[in-house]
Image (spheres, rainbow, N blue to C red):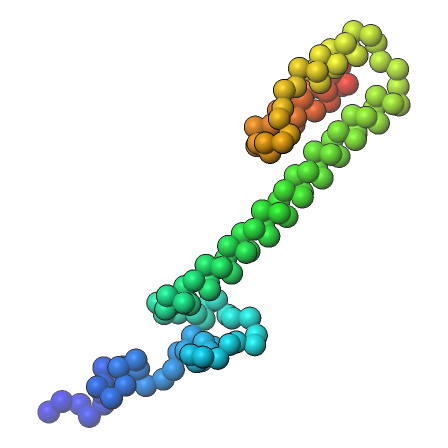
Length: 138
């Protein structure tokens, strides 16, 4: 004779399972808005609805934007620090004319289009700064 115990998730009366999952508990009911930020890990416990997926995409995209801004700020700060150290080194001592000419050539040879905001322009500036630092060490 079969066992009297049944798996509640396979019963006909409650197809979603006998117990509500953490995602179901944290998700607001239709027509209501959540007052607190959603727990994304809890929402990912099941396949989200189209609206839920859209909200998660918005949250993640905003987070991506914030990360991008933070990384860009650190990059700018680091590069500006290197440029400031070059300026300080130039101001602190007198340099031979040959070294000054070589450094001027490196700076004047830089071709960038700041209005376009291209990554390759940032790379070119960074390479020019590295060149200046190397020439100062010689």
